[in-house]
Length: 309
Image (tube, rainbow, N blue to C red):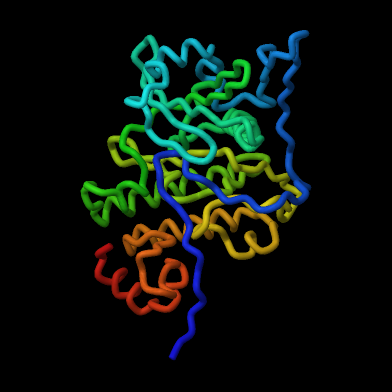
């Protein structure tokens, strides 16, 4: 009789803003720190904040900043009707620029400090990159205690919804392969073509957005880290999502590109099996997709041979 360890069920899903898990802080050795300054005027306001990307990139081909009033107008006053998703770090709203361009506006919660760190990380990192399988950052806004990020709107929700959401149509096998290949290309660009390398640190199905052609775009770089090419790994505090985190990273805080590869492997298992990474509705011992697959490897082989997800 086989023994199985009981797993703690976590939350997953959401449009762009699912809650992530964080451990106690550790050192951030080997990281390139975000070069952002926030000069204050005499009243203590942060309106004088100035951001200048250290390298040209994703922001270089379009407008880089917006006033708060412009984004209020674009999102119809951040109305509930425009709400796309929400989570531990803030909310995402759909909006329209005066030229008709569709955007997604992420309004970050700053109070706990994580929102500020996420804002700086996203602006710094996305300003360096531009790839057809990565979500493009249009710009940002800083006004008093507001931190907002403006992205191109990706119209067809995310992979998590298409796999697990209610009322969705089932993805055929060819589409699943297409999505996997697109996300893999975006991830490979971060790991192989960016210098310094970029480790996403939160690869999961809800962070893979799909456009109308079901092309994948990796999103949400709020937890990403820049790693010096001279370092074999980065030691940092553990953050990510239950069910996707590589065990060696979760236990030691040592982060490498392989941590992203493990998480992407979990996404592939989702695509193949149609199961969630952590599912409390499953029998005791089968809540974890990774552990279930390790026990049911023969079943997984049959699924692959049949070409039926």
